[in-house]
Length: 121
Image 1 (cartoon, one colour):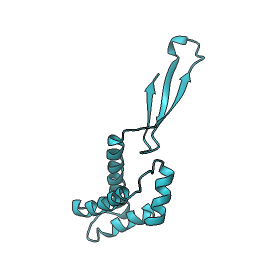
Image 2: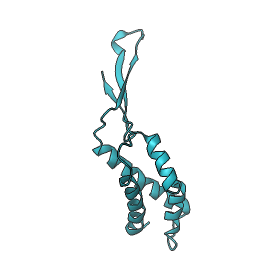
Image 3: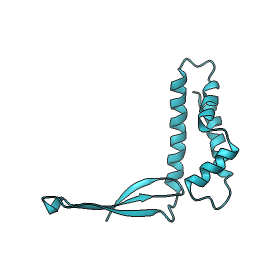
Image 4: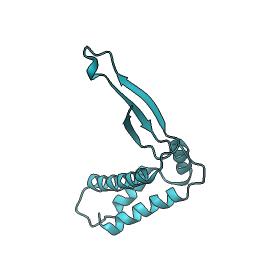
């Protein structure tokens, strides 16, 4: 897919993200709002695929490019998110025969950007 065509797809996604009302903090709220105002994501991907009429690649290859571009956009959003109010759930692997291999960590999740990560305790 050409950069120009891919840029059109990404611009549509970014405009939708920027037009979200203030106070949206959970992915469920965002999904519900987008569902009312945009076509489903698969339609967006199909539209992007039709943009490459003279391309020799298959429909699946075009969809993979669209998915990669969307994932890059998500990664960028998650990178700049301040993760305010993220949840931290303590986890452990204990009860081992050798207590020196016991481990403790936090499973973290940000409701604003949907990033999931772990932190040591």
